[in-house]
Image (cartoon, rainbow, N blue to C red):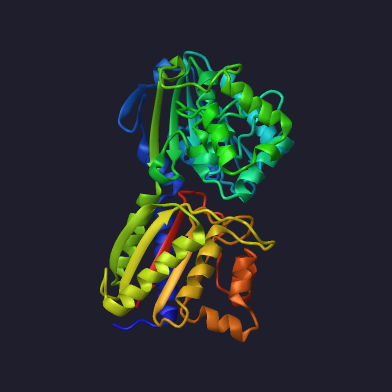
Length: 444
């Protein structure tokens, strides 16, 4: 059956929504944590609740409130209390866990206060207690506890510098871990000797536990030396605050203790479980596409690199399918996921998903029956109220008819205002989850 562009656009939204629904944190927690009488099973591992005096919850991330909601539904009154930090507006109904709101991606004073409350609760836990740590994307920025001698403002400056130069999330988190009192396994040291169970909603390529939320409860394989190499690779050493530069250099020469490694005793009573990931979301999106009659290919859940380059690769795949029916015969759906980066050179407003759609729009201009949707599963793309945007073969022509010059908007990193003018923003509101981005290519 032939599909109009409007049908393709509606299908892309449906497919995206199906992927997001599959990584709903409440359902994910309930699948991983099961209570049967006095026995609590976490990913199949039993815990006898009669042995524990208290059960606490701590955590940080955009999905923290919904993860806490799921844990409350499982544990009920057995949950003593907790402290979880989320991005402003990413709330959920909870009764036993205190939810703090703070800024992301650049930390703020509210995040500092929340981190201190979390530290206080973690230090209360004793040998007869269980502490659940709920981690999801954004946890690094939402749990700022700067190392002694470093101020919040200096940490904000470093985060902004790294974001602007296009550093990867792995690189940013390596440095965050070595400027923090909680990240890089240091929260596990605080919780010790209590039993520590970490539930993770992965938002990083490869689901690396030491990278997600900067790995506060797992061993840290990175070093101060790694931090300085990253800083030098982006030529940022002279632009760092003096206190941060001195802190990293002191750590490099051994004057400061390294973050805890795999042999540290802090990890002897720990369990960590990934309860949701980008691949799980893409799998559900693929099933939704197949149900709508599309031949579907899940190409990768591990995309990294400059956003506009990755977008143009997707446009090339669209042209190939249209011209040669390779790698799929239409109607076709190609799905990818991951976390690309934007090197900011302009003064506009946008996010990596909106920039993805704009770059793709330029390369599929004039191509009939093609739609590309790019969206963040958390419902927010950069510092905008949009989750992403949609583009099709007519996007560029529609824009020029309105007097818009797509190349100028791309050059200025102003994708938000471009798609706002066209009415093609993907608006979902906060979804309560966060497993990186999904890119959906449909060829009718």
